[in-house]
Image (cartoon, rainbow, N blue to C red; front, side, top):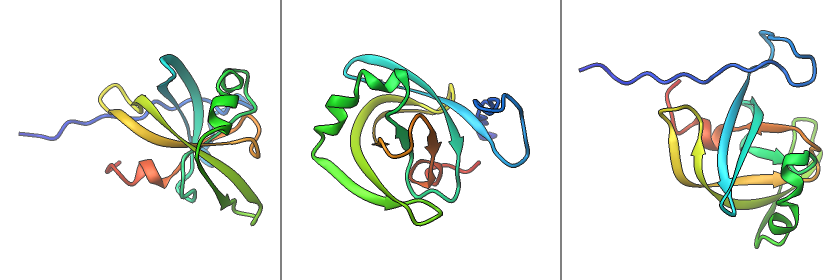
Length: 128
């Protein structure tokens, strides 16, 4: 019996509105505090963690809850800039229609504005 094939949905770059070979964006969905969240993330195989910026209008409604999180830490971006991370467990993380994870810890940061990236903490769970 063959394996199930599930593909990430390619989304245009939210800034340039273009598809390019240099960057790949997709959409993720999850639930926080029983509310649905949907965001576009850049797939970043150089990123250790999945990090979602708290600068977007969508994330502003959860900011105070996330910043109170006891799961705090730091990471560094490619240029060596320190990022303050806040871990938060979300529900029903949907990567594709076939890949839904009941509970998973995502990281959030004020330091990256409204950007979001899908890192190796999640990508390494799968063979793409």
